[in-house]
Length: 230
Image (cartoon, rainbow, N blue to C red; front, side, top):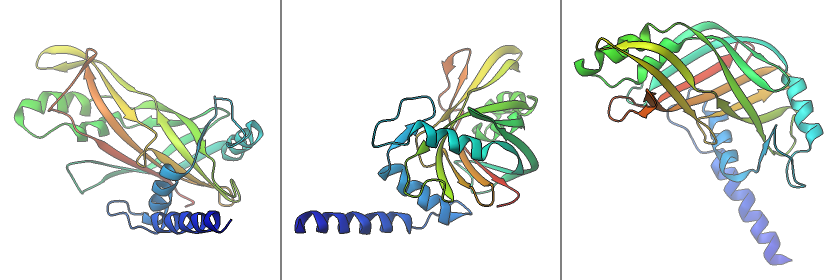
C-alpha cells in the first residue's frame, strides 16, 4: 500500500508540474498549460463512440453538448508557425448544436498566412486570399477530467477540411484543400459552464492541390477563438 501511495503522490506531483508549466506563445497561458497536461494524461471520450467504464458516460456527453448548445460571438486570431504576429477578426460568430460546432463565415482568406514567402508562391497566396468565407464545421469530443462540467470541461476540436474550388494559380485551376490536425495541444477547447464562455485552439495540418499534398510552399497556421464573455 505504501508503494501505491508513493506512486499516487508522484503522479499528482507530475500532473501539477505539467499544469503549472508556462506556455510561450499563447496569450492565455494558464488554460493552454492545463490543456497540454490533460492532453497527455487524460483519457479521450468521443461524442460518437461508445464509452467504457473509465470514460465519460453517454449521459455526461449529452449533458455537456446540451450545456454548451447555443450561439457565441468572439475574436478569432491566427498566425503562421513562421511568425510571432497574430492577425485578428472581431465579431466572429459560432454555434454549438447537438453534435458539432459551426463557425459562421470562417475567413478562408486567413489560410493564406500559411503560404511560404517568395514570389514563386505569390499566385497561390493571392488565390487563397481571394477565397470567400465559409462555414467551418468542427467535431467535438471530450476529455474525461475530474469534476467534469463543474464548471469546466476540456474538448478535442476536430475541424473539417476547408475546400477552395477552382482556385486560379499561374493561369491554371486547382481544387485546394486545407486539412486540420486534432488530438494535440493546439487543437483543443475549454468551456466554462458557469460563464458559458469558450476558448478554442485549432491548427492546420497540410495543403492539398488536386489531391496532391504540397511540400515546401505551405506551413502550419495556428488559430485561437475566444468568446466575448471570457
